[in-house]
Amino acid sequence: MTALKITVKAGEHNRDNCPVIANVDNAKIKALADKSVILTAGDSGAVIPAQCDLSSDGKSATLGWILDGLAAHQERTYTLSEGSVEGKSGVGFNAHEDSIDVAIDGRAFTTFRYGKDQFRPYFFPVLGAEGRLVTRGEVSKISKDHVHHRSLYVAYGEVNDVDLWGEGRNSGRVVHQCFTEQSGGAVVGRIYTQNDWVSKSGEKLMSDRQNFQIYSLPDTGSVIDLDLTFIASAGDVHFGDTKEGGIISIRVNPSLNASDGGKIENAFGGISESETWGKRANWCDYSGIVEGTQVGIAVYDHITNPRYPTYWHVRNYGLMTTNIFGAGTFEGNPSKDASYILKNGDEMNFRFRIYIHAGDASIGKVAQKYHDFINPPVVTVS
Image (cartoon, rainbow, N blue to C red; front, side, top):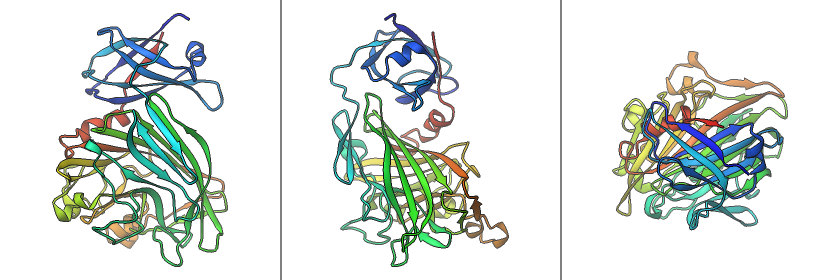
């Protein structure tokens, strides 16, 4: 097969270890789906792993790779062909009965836990630079407060008057139903899961789709993307105005807590809980020292999300979550009640990126890399 020419333009921002997933309608690329493929850079001759996947309907395909070292306003041309890169295994999964271990080029990264006996699916551990633990799980010898803050997860505290945030006697659950995709790859691995939100008695309140994409990136800058859909599959769904919730939620390793030497920072330069809690921002970051290594974790809110930019429920004791429904509570003004009714049969869609980085927000280039998410490079195929 004749090699394909792929051109990528950096746009207005430097691109360093930037995930690129381009949707293309090209018969030659579709023919490469599920095969080992490589990109060869025209300027340097460097060979890097790539990944071609068919869309679920088979009508188009995606081409993915990691773009590194391309300066703003520059472009690079590659040729796409069959092949592989020695020593690069990409994103690999090891599935168990109720969990999936995720490795990147053989390095342990995280585990997705979805047992039906727990209150909700979540990721734990989440490992950053030098294998340091960035999040706190359900058990901590250092801190046992807020046991429901399970590392990295989706939850909300008032859904049709049911608590799906806490883990009390009357709390509801987010119950895993099935996977629609579970696939590793040279560039990106996908964990696509469907869940039912139910009351304590098991009454179905709504459903969701949590589609996670994990990229083959170095431990100094790992990325998890979440495409999340709330579905009113059992009647109208009322999301109450409460601080007790985070549509995407992080509980950091206690070593990162802002109350113990760590740092909270948002997109507007707000520092600590006093300047970030209940405030709206495009992103928020938590960083600190774990076993002598400075690491951090940021959450990016996409510009297409409802009520962008989100409010943040972020605490000095280690919690960081997005919450678009709690404006009245956050601002202490009942007239700004932000509760919402999702009508029967309707859907609400969100996109988030979790960026696990070395250093603090400045060293980790959190502001720059936000544009990898909302203003990605432009790709053409010829």
